[in-house]
Length: 467
Image (cartoon, rainbow, N blue to C red):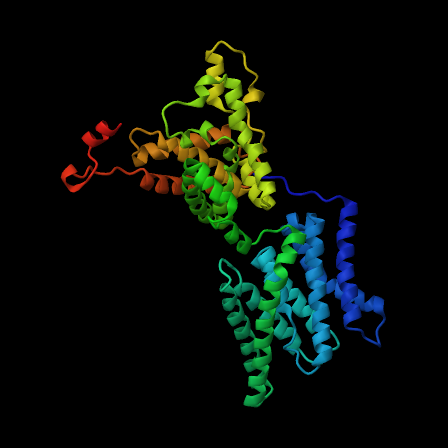
């Protein structure tokens, strides 16, 4: 149950290392040294940059393999180097004005904090060891400020979270200023001035990061948490349509989102992405809401008048219809994946069985969802949650034991049919996921007592009369 790692051909490796050489060349141009040959300077800068490329190649292969991602990453590094050189040229006596936190914040928001901390360290060493800086202050401020910036913006679920990043980054610079003040016997005024410049860099880095983030998102095709939060707004046109035209599907999507978010967080996956993906996973049912049982409020089922093959075509068709709607409404690829993968390549067994009982010899392919199978943890959990939430609803006696038994059966079936073969989930992950499903679904399907009719309650007798 693990996906194949992206493969890069030898020529592709040359292109990617040429990008790194370009960043080294930019560094040599930004910080020229008269007494040293350019080739020697570029080689030294290349050696200092190499660790971050090796980290990408071995431990962040999906970014390394995507040339668009890698180019954007290289552009962030190069831009930070050029901006550092420009600030040093304008204010040469202030090594605090090394904007490594800007790169750290952008890399954290676009990829993750681990990569950002590594990049901040490499940039801090690269910039701080340039001949333009006569001492180690630029190196220390770059390392401390960049690391603080990456850690401060580690979880960005609200725009005001940037204030935490600013505070931590400014705090990192302040610690560096106090340390140098003690070691070099600075005056209080000099220490405060250094802290002020560090705070300026912290505020400026956060402001610029928020300003350029939408542009980088579009170019890199990465969906950040801020974009996901915007997509989760129920007032967005597509979700509003789902809530009004297919209310049963919307209610199912909300219940499924609660399951997925909790299960994802239990294994360290992206719970917010799972929640948003679940909100949109069934939007294709808007093409024909009444052909799905959760939206059928009146007696009778339109499938009763249709041949099994036609019914299966409508049911499986909601995946492609959802993909088309998602494109029309501009949903990012990471959300569209939930629409395409939440059924994988499973079969519509109900109508396949009905066709066989009707004396037909049906082609199973006509009763199969188009797929693909889930390729990331969040979409795999969405597939399991979709089946589990629907199955538990039909249990006559939803005790904790029966709920867990149903969940175990469903997960085992998905494994046996190969639906989880491409998903990065371990057996330990699956146990945690099943545990979260059981806990939440058991609470959702608990028994309630009948309140007396005299108190305005609905009793068993009232239910019988109102049916």
